[in-house]
Image (cartoon, rainbow, N blue to C red; front, side):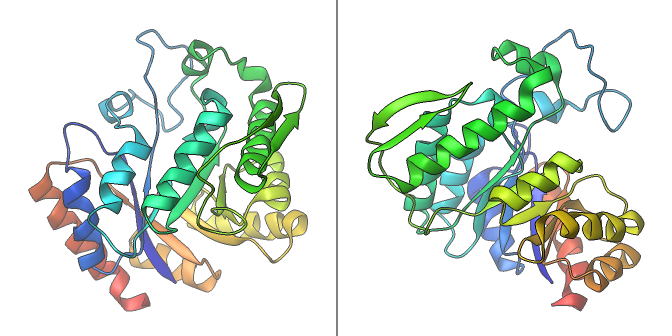
Length: 275
């Protein structure tokens, strides 16, 4: 089992240029960053974990700018979004951003995607929350066309453009891996269609096996399982290993640099028994 880190990078925590080398020094092979463009002050959508929304949600750095900074000071670390909110993103611009990250990092970009949960945030981007799944799917299909075709075009109900030139193309072929977040039946269909991995989040380790079995019924054996915000206690890690999880993205709280480095030492020690 491989180990990476999932976290929220903000202006109040460790910086990307310090975090990247610290991860490689401790044997982690991936960094996935959360994304929120903003958080509306007045919200009706409840925080999925319950209680007040933590301040890190509205202070997140732009993931692609931050990951480019990490790319400049690391050599092997996978650099991804966990998750990119595709329903709040222009697909042509997003295709260029991911491809650019893949180019400047030497082929280390991972595109973790999901539909998101904050309805007010989506509405500020002109997205109807009721149709966000359909919009996400069309935008991802359009992004794949932009990555893989010299003269890309897409004609859907929600995304539509005639042939265009769009460069750079990703270094990875046919394109950077798509890790699909979510836990619904539609998520599993997305994994089957375009995902190279299923990325569950918030699923209890004891419930994960049944969900993996259900995902396999839809998507087959090809996609890997990458657990986002994975727990690092021994019982949970044993379950991940027994279930054949390819990579556990251990959750790193958003803290100042000195506290973060101590936490990374603890996470690395927990992971050491499984490497």
